[in-house]
Amino acid sequence: MSTPGYELLASLMSDPDASGVDLFAAAGELRDGFVRSEHLIGLLPQDAPGLLVAGLERAGRAGVVDAWLELGRLLAYGAAPWAPYPERDIPASIEAYREADRAGSLAGALGWVRIAYFANSAAHEQDAAGRLDELLAAHQQNPDVLLLSGYLRYQGYGHPADPAAAVPFHRAAAEHGSADAAFEMSVLHATGSGVPADDDESLRWTVRAAELGSVRAMGNLGVFYATGQGVERDPATALDWYAKAAYAGHANSAYTAGVMCLTGDGGLPVDGDRAAAFFATAEELGFDVDDALGSMGLSRA
Image 1 (tube, rainbow, N blue to C red):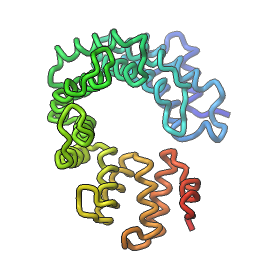
Image 2: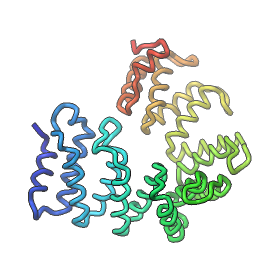
Image 3: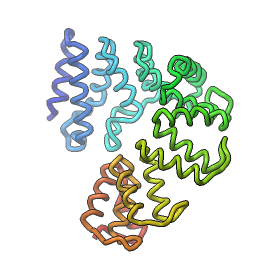
Image 4: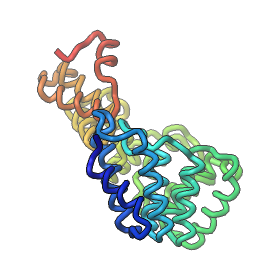
């Protein structure tokens, strides 16, 4: 038994005249099947991951640049947290993004530099740093380019490790709307890395990062208000921030919000239904709720 998405892509792959656009669309349907967990209920054959990769490669060779971008993403991260398919292959992911880069895609260029950096790939270090410097010269106000430039300088990837040299890039990226850069500024001020340690500045940047959509910053604000770290303790506000982080895809925040509702933490009203909803969200994001509750001597009931 197989799904229509699988059958369509398999049929197109057997057709030498199939267009890249059609192949890309069918590959997207098959990918969505993994996201819907169809592989867990026996609806996707064992060769489905390989078919997905082959379909995207053929679509890319047919000129569909987005197919290379999608293939690079899938090979690095899988279809979803609960569907790590196709199998993770960092070198192949980098090569897929580089194909998009060669076709003139800025997203492709940033994609392979980002993957190489986070994988700490020694084989790609100098090429990645050089390519990013080219992008920086051409896109001086692009927040993603600025953010990566800060990362490479902070960690010493293709550049001397220098936290102070990273600060201007992170600040500029944050000023151009990068939530991740604003979060980095909050960390730098909290730790005194490249800038003077300053808890007030750290909090200000954390709030800014959360406003820009950083789920890590939202989760941190939940911690701050739950514990009174740098702000007046306020369980209700903590729960609000944990909830925002949960809805934005932060598993640990979803679990913590569930515990707060389950136990009435800080004088909050006990709300079993809301706790169950948060726990369900945490599980969808890959968090083992029952194990964590058990370690705290708690249960859903």
